[in-house]
Image (cartoon, rainbow, N blue to C red; front, side, top):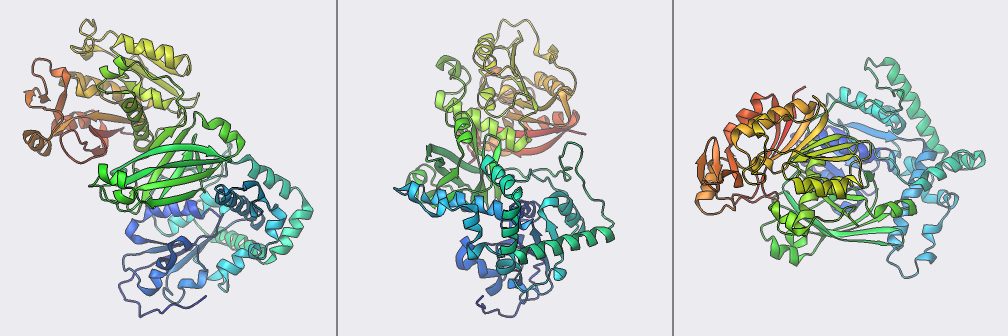
Length: 614
């Protein structure tokens, strides 16, 4: 390795940890943990795709960086940061090589996908044995990563097969704060599992691979021995697997609110077992897009080909104020097997854009929706102009439920004021049959359509009409909203969504509905609430004529756009609404202002995330 000039290290440089990411050894999962524990300014990622920039911490170290993580040889930073604690993760070398083979093979197919003679692409057709016999694949850990470093000199050596246990120990050793650990990536492809079984059951192949990688196997065995010694002397309580085989969950930490971003998937194409996605993403002030998390049908994909920061004059023309809008376009290619292709037609595709400062708003789309669109006359009744806007609104609400509330596919969710099924339209692509959706509304035609078009296709989606009086939507209703008791048992839902109802209710009705939401939510359950928050900033913008909602007529605890028919559009004083929320025992986890009053925002109305105290 060539030496880079290393000037005298300033005393203020505080780099504490050096983390070596060996491919296919849980390094990507560990990288996500690092993002949860440290701020973006405290992390430096050293990966080959960064080119010369990857050596910046050698030539011009940043004083704020506390941890360096990436694909690099273990001795790289020994002289520059001699006091830093080194961390490395290992995995059974044969299993790692099988995983790496499938990973490599997939990349070869993606690279060849654009070539005219795809079937003749030789590299993609190498067998596992041929791949393993390639010189550069033999003893890769020793030659490319560990080199001359000794395991005994590492601060911590983790084993991928015991990822949750070892991560728990490292967290305590480093005194890391609590965080929420997302599900560890698994390989979704049946072909990988079949190959794994085939190789491990053939002793002749195992012996051959072992002989080719004897140094890596010796290193792995030494790492296991060191781990056993560590466990014997450690006073830390280890996590173990329970009877269901699931590892205990690391302590939860409230997720950070998504960054203010805009984006859309323009095109979905499947060709030669490759899913191609194209679209654009830009932010208000988060800088340049760095990557994505990609999920299809609730399955996260750990590898895919991406091309970012493609020139996009069309996006810049529409969104000139956004950072990087002139280079906002992207392309993604994901290798799929035939089973996934067969399922893709109605599967939910989710892209979580990644920026240096965190995660942007998730982008959702399906190749072909499961449900027909409601009639235009119904759509326009819900303050939505046309079918395209209805679809975008539905998937944006679904994204909020998943990203902000942490909605799981098996959860029970209540949709208060479900209208024409705006939330349900997108949710049918996410919620599993073991999950449950309940929605109710005061407009009988809305419920009739939803029962006919949604419940008949998805029996776990239930819609109910209640003859509740509403001056605008049900003027002949017989039930007072102030007296309506939600027809559900206490603590029967994980999540509640109130998409637009509170912009059409009076203050006493809002207070009563908050009481009922609190009652039916489980402890720790969350509610997504959309509303108009009136404060000094929004009042000033309204006065300047910037707002799309002229909330200028004062009513009890708020304002309306029509003094003769207040329910047409109501906004509440922010401090008063928060007082009602807190009096009922909710915690406000997120407050995001919308663009309705003239602000710059990627959401229209104001949005709150409430949590029922435990």
